[in-house]
Image (tube, helix red, strand yellow):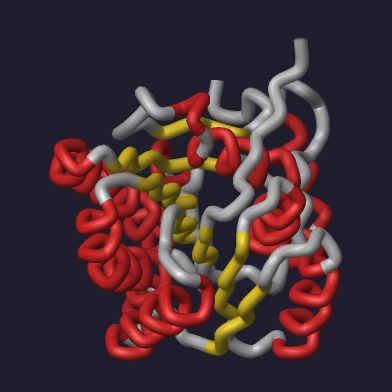
Length: 251
C-alpha cells in the first residue's frame, strides 16, 4: 500500500531555492501541498520561474532575495515568511557554495566566504526560526551537508570544514530542540547532477562515478524527497541523524 505524504496547510522555508537541490525541494514540497517560501541571492529570473512553476500546485509560493550570510536579513526572511504564509513548520537549510583551493594557496577571503555561507548561514536561519517553532510546539529542520563533510576532500578545506560543522550543529540543535518536539536532521548528498556540477571538469565527474556504487550521479529530486520524508509524520521519531544520499559513494 502506497503512503502519500500530505503537507496541506503546512509552511516550509527553503534557503537557496532557485537552483539545484533547493529548487527540487521547492517543487516537491509544493507538490505535497505545502506553502513554500524560498531564498535566492542572484538568480532572480530562475527564482521567478520556479515560483511560478511551484504555484501551479495550488499553493502559495514566496521567493525572497537574501544572502544567507547576512544575519539581519535572515531574521527578516523568517518574519516575512511567517507574516505572508501564516506560520513556519519546516526549515530546509540548503544554501551553500564552494570556492576550492589547496590549503597553502587558499586566501582568507575564500575561507571566510564559504564558512559564512555554508555554516554561518545555517546558524542564521536556525537562530531566526527556532523561537517560533518552539512556541508552536513542533516542526522539522533539515540541514543539507555533504559526504565531504564526513570524509574530507582534497582542495576543499573550507567547504569540508563548513559542512562538517553543519553536521555537529545538527546534532547539537537536535538535542536542544527535542523537548519542543522539533526533529533536526541532516542530509549528506554525494555528487548530485545540479547546475554547479554540470560545470565541473569531466575528470572530476568520472572520478566520482568510479566511487558511486549505483554507477550514476544522483538527481536533485532524490535528495528533495528525503527532505520531504524527514519533515513528514513518517519520520517523527528520527532526529540527530545524517542520511547519506550518495548512491553508495561513501561506502
